[in-house]
Image 1 (spheres, rainbow, N blue to C red):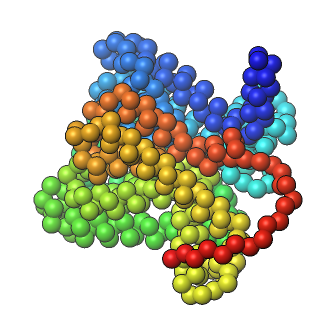
Image 2: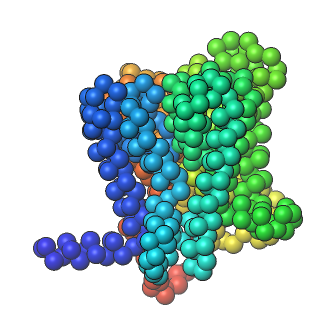
Length: 450
């Protein structure tokens, strides 16, 4: 029996998707242990393992949902632990591991390269070490530039040392699409500050585009020369941001609890910020619990779609949604092939996008159903669905129910955040995927749909 268990464990650990999942789990549990220490809190008391696990998962999976006020509850040690978890989760465990091997002069073998490829979501094994180095360098550069812009406001408000610390923390949190804040109330006090809002918005957008897109833009400069993937990412990201901004502005325009009392310029800024944060970054500049349910539903859709592949963002992904959207357009037009920007999208990609969408929908429905049973009569279903999609999309925006959830709900949401970060499809392939074909061909079957 022991030998059989060891054999099965060996087979599981041979699969790159599962090794990546295990690496995230290790980081999460180490983080939970550290955050549960009395030294991690300002009152020198343990926060409880469930709350520590939830916070660690939220930070490592760059989500931003919190059960306590990060600024008030955690000590400097606790905040530093959270910041490290965000950075590790945002860049990826294997990318940082590969750079550690390079720094220590160790050789990166084939197995390590396969793991890096899996995490960066690329097709080729060549140039992965160079690409990992590029990812790390670009990320640090962007975070430094973001911190410099934020420091122009934070230093004047909080003094030199605290201003620098606040700038670094929020720059990393924004670029990694985490949404953790140490201001106490996200950026609500700065809802009309253009420097803070635009800097965090650009950091979130850059973090959600994907590192491969940066490299493609750097190499080719012109949009027409970019790869089909990069074009899809940029077009879908632009469309979703604009549509989200317009819908938020239109629906909330006369809502006195959100943006009705601001001038048009500030209304547009606030609306654009809320649209941006639905790209899987849990900051907010107004009280999300005060928005209309119709606005919350729009945000749920945007959060479910999320950011782009090989980025710090989560969700279904813009390209997956784009493939399904253009497949629908092609079917309506009666075209034989799915076409985007005069390029044919292969059937295998269409089928993969469909499978990912179905798996993600099933996960969200099941989690929302479970939470609605556990939290029966305590919260509105729209709030539970909002919380579920926020966790799955690693967004971190809440309508104020996170700290009030039952421990069972927190554990379920922790699992949802984990699946949202590593990808439910990745985990399913890791456990169930086969690397062989039985060679059988079956007769066609006719099914009427629609």
